[in-house]
Image (tube, rainbow over all chains, first blue to last red; front, side):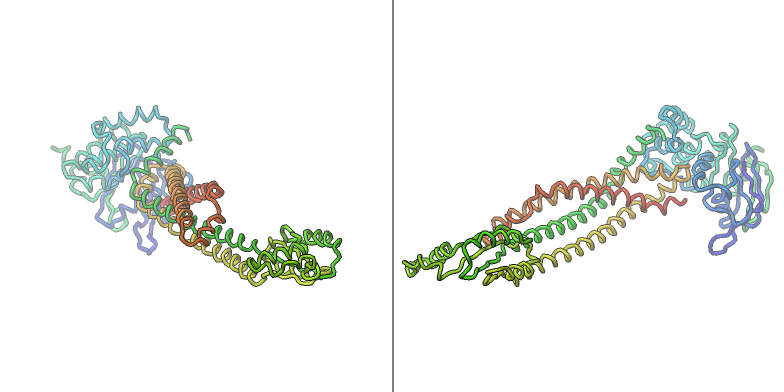
Length: 228
Length: 303
């Protein structure tokens, strides 16, 4: 699903953000990528979304070798991933319904498919009553659920969540992770990037710790809520 | 792309006009202002050209024949003059007719010439008058006439003609330069306004890219929006220029100065200009709106 082989990445100012990173996330896994600010988490996200290219090494996501991906193939590749961002990134002049439908629109889905899929996903995320609202009319937690619905509506094999709990109240944060776990149980691979170590300790599971551009820990930790 | 997807994108473009109404107003306003300025500059130039051309055409060349010119030669002379390029209608004025004209011009003192009609042919020469329809060639035309047989004197106000020709050429050159500069400034202003509009929505564009939208999928609504902006601006500017021109014509025709008022009849009527202006405005509006939008967003598509 995700393969990073000897990946190095430097910004234009020669800052070395990632140093010889080797990482593999298999299909159906749920993995947390943790690290403090500036550790290299954002660089990994940029590489996984093909926002940028690795300085050296190989990045393979969903079978696409991103280093060899042509510019015109990028949209097709991105449709194979669901993305959730910290700042939600909903389109402000579209309703909740249209924001979710947009993910299907870009795949040239028919109106019939859109009419079937969008209400289904909205209901799954308990957003059916907010369908006609605009992003600015709903809370942060609700906006993140809309972003999750948008990521999910295409039924992608992989969802990448970049600090999805960073901009919402703590009580909703755990709810979001539980939703991601529920999605994962249905077979979707989830990679969640976060700096909230406490939350990771609470949920447990595959945890990849990045410090100073290097993977310093990659293993499974026991979750606090499982031991309760 | 499915027809339903295309319809969605077009609908989206129309919807964006309203949802980004502040930028819509700014873009339409800028486009209207630029079209109006360029439009009025073009109209001004065309009218100055038309008036100067008319005044220039009022120039006449007067050809006095030698006293001993045989009468039967006059027809040959008339035919020769009619063959001169740049000359309009040629009128023959015999010595007798010339005498009568002169007597009439004396008004109340005309009686002084009473009884001299029979001697007219020995007092006054026959003459020809002809309009110079190509004022810029006045010097050459007069010189050519002077070389003809039996021509005693050929006179035309070539200095005035030259001045008018200079004015006309200056208006054409200056007007062309001013219009070109205005068009250039307009393109810069319009492009910047559209760029600002696209810049304010760069986040929206990047979101679309992250969910896998192709560049054309993102561009179409923006182009539709730009084209509609251009269309709206073109129609508003056309109505503005129509109203403005009519008001100007009316104001000038009621002007206390008879000379200014008389000029209005030589101004280009709006009926003659309305289709080219509307066509030009629509083309300029659609092109600047559509192409401006498409180009302004190129940078933001690189996500």
